Image (cartoon, rainbow, N blue to C red; front, top):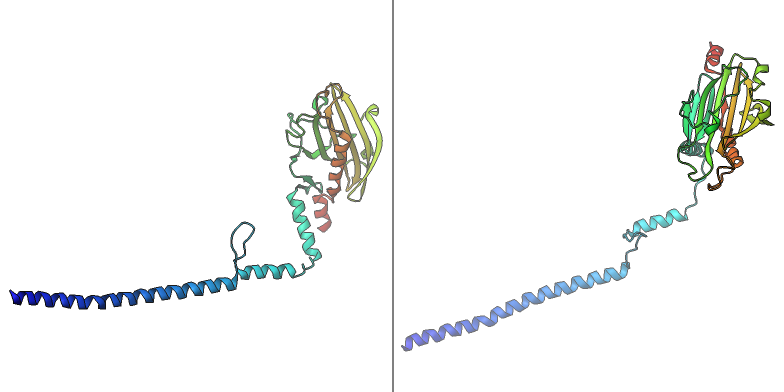
Length: 283
C-alpha cells in the first residue's frame, strides 16, 4: 500500500515539475509572434506615412505616382506645332465624316452633300416628294435632251410640325449643245425672278430665281447654267413649303434662310473635263 502511494506521489511530482516548463515554452512562442507582428505593423505604418495617400483619379480609381508624374510632365510640355500637311489631312477627314461625296467621271462633276441628306443619282423616281402639289423637281434646259446627274434631298421627317415640304440641290448636264443654247432656259417669263450670277469652281454660272404658288403650296428656287467642255451644266436648288393659307397652325420655316444654306453646298462643286475628253487628250 505504501509502495503504491509512493509511486503515485512521485508521478504527481513529475507532472507538476513538467508543467512550468511547458508554460515557459508557450509564453516564449507567443512573445516572438507578438513581437514580429508589432515590427511589421510599425514598418507598414512608417512606409504609409512616408509615401502619403495614393492619388485618386476623377473616376475614383487609384493610379500610381509614376503615372501622376508622367501626366504632370506632359501638361508642362508645350504642344508641338501641327504641320500643314497633317492639318490638311485632318480637315479632309473631318469633311468626309460630315458629308457624302459624289463624283461622276463621265461628266467630270463632283461635290460634297451634307451628311444626313439623301443622295439620288440619275432620274428621280415617280414617288419623289419633289415640290409637293407643285410637281416634280424640274430641269430647265432649253432642249429636252438634258441628263439629270444627281439630286440631294433631306431625309423624311425633318421639320416635323412646320410648313416645310422639301428642299433640294440638283445637278444636270447636256452634252453637244451650243453655248448660245446653254444660255436659254425653259422657265416661263412670268415665273422668272431676278437674274442670278454665281461663280462655281471658277466658272461663271448665269440664271434666274423662280417662284410659283398653287394648291396652298409655294416654291422658291434658283437655276443656273454654264458652258464648258462642250457641255452645258445646270445647277438648281430650291425650297417648297405649305402656303400662307394652309400653315396657320404650323411652325413657319423661312425658305430664304434654307436657300442660303443650300447655296453653300455649291462651294464644294468641282467641274473637270469629262472622262472621255481626258482620255482622248492623253492618247
